Length: 287
Image 1 (tube, one colour):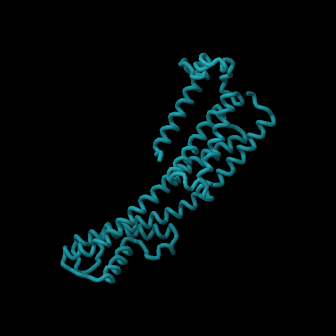
Image 2 (cartoon, rainbow, N blue to C red):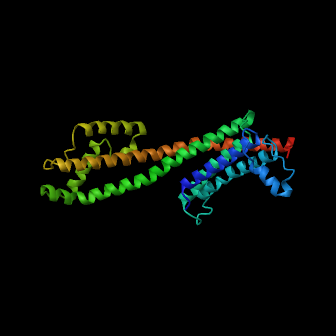
Image 3 (cartoon, rainbow, N blue to C red):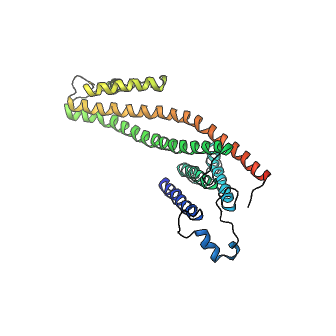
């Protein structure tokens, strides 16, 4: 699977190459242009118009490429919702490619417009920028939620598995499963994590956890009258684990709200882009 970091570096490299070309073709610098060099070695490119103005060949094909790349982002959505290409690669790899196209598309469109974003196109452009930016932010929280929540759940399960033997070795105390369930329940409440946390909204859960943080700063959970400071510190760590698990559960719900924000901008971007393309074709494009 191609890493997301590779896609980021590739996008930066393409942006730098295009930036270099635009500086040379617009005569901002005296360095040689790659296009001009190609014209000297490829006879068919001898009369190629290297103007970067909108509507000229370079701008035209960058626009085609940018819109095409943005359309390719929908392959991930088709796979996710309709199961197409489900047997091809991993979901995380498709998500990385989806975000890569979402980054590369705006880069190509910026150079397609020759950094002149005006009128109706500006609405589509900024919708695309918001869509791409929110996609990168959404990917970050999505990956963090999946990976960290899984790790935290595993750590909490390991704690519950090893805690009885830890107690027996530390204070030579044996309790039954019901006692330990009660201890875990009280520890979660101490950390501000309600057993019925799903019944609370994000703000209420946050306030409970904030109160839990305050309590953890002042005193350790009791757990049991026979527990010493060492065991109570271990329980405090368990409480913090469940506090973070609850945080990620709530963050997962926020991702649903994020999708509601992300999708309308994407739809509007495609709609205005299609209007722009149709208008350009109807009124003619200099190529």
